[in-house]
Image (cartoon, rainbow, N blue to C red; front, side):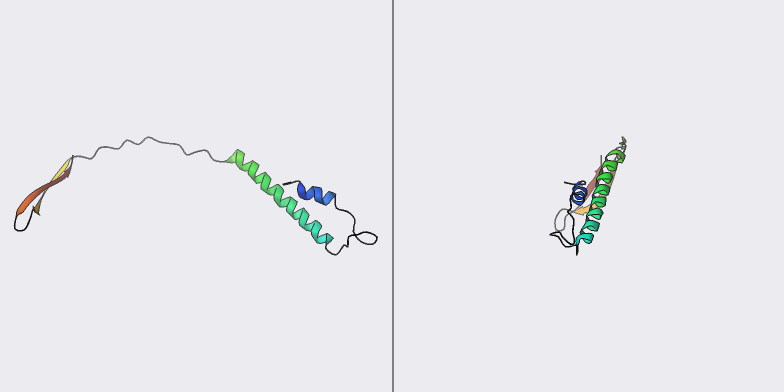
Length: 93
């Protein structure tokens, strides 16, 4: 169980040491790791909740009116075949 799982495990851990079935060799490390895991999962869950309420809204949209290009005409020399000079009109309109 996310977030609460490590805390439930920590609370339900049995005793260790003399007279029990579990040795205490690694139990302290396990408990420290459980606490760290619970803290990190809590921070992660908290950051998700904070992000839901503080996320930036979409940027404002603006209408941009583009001016149409002004008509231009250029006359340029060209070749329409071998030894056949000509003129070409190039422009925007």
